[in-house]
Length: 115
Image 1 (cartoon, rainbow, N blue to C red):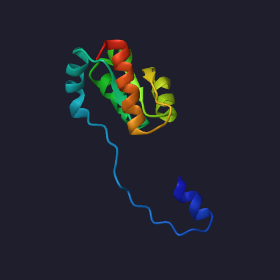
Image 2: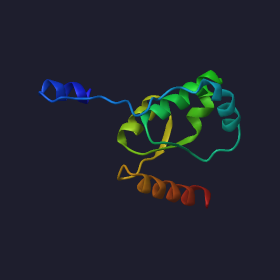
Image 3: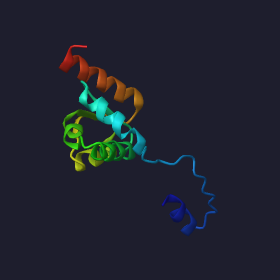
Image 4: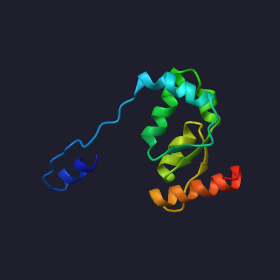
């Protein structure tokens, strides 16, 4: 997307794929086991991880349970994606950084679970 815009503007662009997001379907049974335990929170740093989480939950037939667990999202884009999928977003830090996300999670756990 960005590469196409830059090319149209006359830039020479070399696209290099740094990583590829894939759905680890073999982990669906593991997710099912984890969700059936006691979880305080699920954390997402990207919309793709939230989508993969929910897709694995569908495969494992625990989608309803997956949607009940509180979710922390690093920023507004991830939050919007997660909420559109029906996830229970309870945390989004003011700044979209890992340190701020961790601080928001610690505050949430202290205030809600006494950690």
